[in-house]
Length: 294
Image (tube, rainbow, N blue to C red; front, side, top):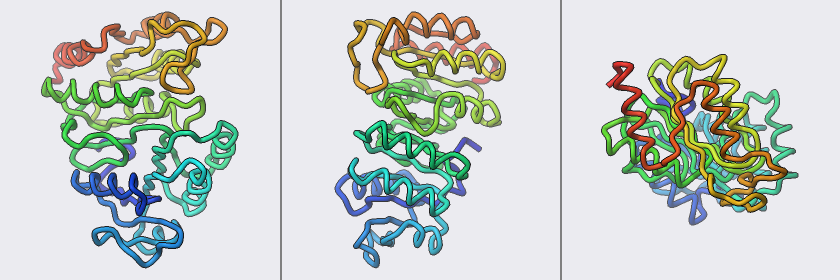
């Protein structure tokens, strides 16, 4: 069953004629993804390898019944691309673009409220469901179908975690990079809830980062709502206070958002916290074995 990206997903790529959009559209197709349309203003009536290109998202929705959008547009045009997808009634937006100003993301969050549209990202590696496909930057070869859900704030560690699991023979139900910006469309709690309800997911890996309180809030949610085992890692444990590490959201300020605080909150919620990123896969294997799921 997986979550968010499934056999009923029909994908439109916004920015499909650009270098990023065209490359990743083709890579998605190679993984079996149903990319049924693209959108680039002024390029309607053309195609990319037989994929029809429309000038507007609403045209792609009407003519191709698209319900998922992958956005690869430059940052200056991305807020309008997101608003267009929301107005067209697309159910899921996956936005890979980085560099969107916080003020614009506040407007996006307001537009998403009550719209019926969920957004992953921005500044994220995307989403992948083995056996169905992907929307985003994740390499095709790292995935294997299975029963572990992956949620990560870190793009690079998303790939690393998936590959670790696959190398150990542990497949994934769905893997999602939520993005590391201060404001993102969908956070840990919403995805934890979806994985908890998904009958195919037997365990969850949650990769957090220093900065903000998302992991602490997720820990509180896990304590009262998640019965499946959760294995977690927090990136940035050795980062000095006040130094941004990789993402705009990964900064310790005023003594808040430290790795130590996040470890404490997660462990208090019964999460298995692994402090060595190279050992996360092994911990997941132990959890599945003890639960009789391998």
